[in-house]
Image (cartoon, rainbow, N blue to C red; front, side):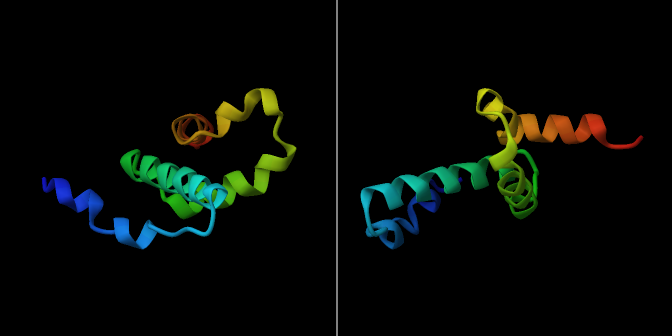
Length: 79
């Protein structure tokens, strides 16, 4: 695996508007890459989580992380 593969687009991220914008971009990219690693469709995951997050208890926000989201989907899926 080429190490530089992960840095090919770094110049595209040099300016993201602000520090907060950079943090938000980093969070979204981390979620998307975690989804890909777990073989989750990132768009499906983000659509579901963004739809549910406002009504979700803050104490249980970890339940919406990709690995737990996938486990919950697999438990509720019909056999």
